[in-house]
Image (cartoon, rainbow, N blue to C red; front, side, top):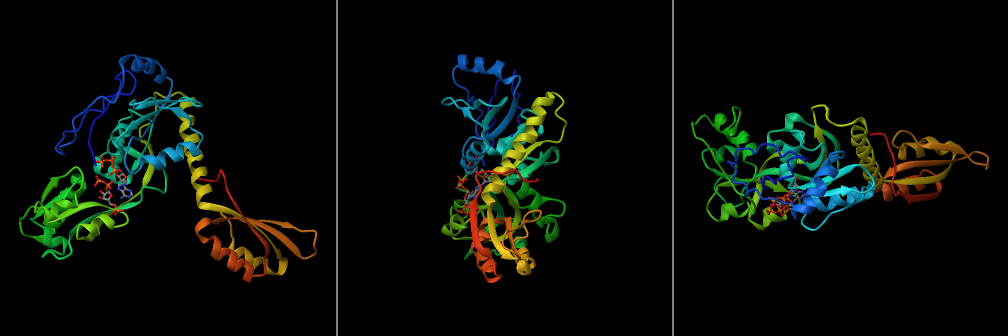
Length: 347
Ligand SMILES: Nc1ncnc2c1ncn2[C@@H]1O[C@H](COP(=O)(O)OP(=O)(O)OP(=O)(O)O)[C@@H](O)[C@H]1O
Ligand SMILES: O=P(O)(O)OC[C@H]1O[C@H](OP(=O)(O)OP(=O)(O)O)[C@H](O)[C@@H]1O
């Protein structure tokens, strides 16, 4: 995780005050291009909803896909971290995922996409509302130790050294009032050391007894000869806003927050569900509806053929083969599955 503090045009996006950089974050740098391009942007941002999105890393690609699916069109000039949306009064602000919670919490931008892990690490969680879980960037924050090492428990790590990019969460776990150190009753204080990346190397290099880092597939952890002994939290990407009412936003801009949320929910639902349609004899309808209950309820329409009905229902994509097998067994016929391009569903 990086903790850089990008500098944005102060008349438009006010950068929140930098947090004391005990974490050894990267030096602040201006992400803006030529002065002339920036001054053109300054005026354009005034009447726009500012939306922070990850500028790099694991969350960037899926976020851009989501924006495209929601028909949020923009042009991003080379090296410029602000892009004006063409078809809505929105400006995208490209920031490191780890910086987004602070910008959102302090109201410098109205909306953001980032990971739940960096929200908790940022210490701004209390000021942030999660509007929507986005279903990507899924991972777990775990304590890991060498598989063949002498320490295999959290208690065993007490008083030792932990390398991590998540020093707030790691300190809470080990040094907190109900933390591992307090429970071990030994007056030992575990040392939490910040590492910006490639955290898994720390144990092999002899600089830590254990690490706290993200795990998804587990490949990186296993390659480094580590295994997990504790999970601090599970995380995924989320759409967030500030708990503070957006008093400086016009009603039009405020309504865009809801619009973006429902468009995203539609794109996610279209990925998650397919549309199933089939015919079934009325005597077998109850059985079939148990297999395809739908999100709210299935639609059942009478057919011209006496005693038969047509059913349509949304079905989870990952269950579709099993659902079709079961429908066939229940007597359903003419089972058709349609992919959804997009949809609007209750959120
Ligand atoms: N292996 C992973 N699988 C899924 N999601 C991940 C994974 N690693 C990180 N994430 C998610 O992506 C977010 C950004 O992580 P990433 O390492 O890409 O950050 P970054 O912005 O590129 O910062 P850095 O330059 O410090 O690596 C994390 O906070 C987490 O929510
Ligand atoms: O369980 P896995 O699927 O192997 O993923 C875990 C790795 O992904 C993240 O790092 P990333 O690759 O983003 O780079 P970094 O180490 O520079 O942060 C995380 O810090 C782990 O190293």
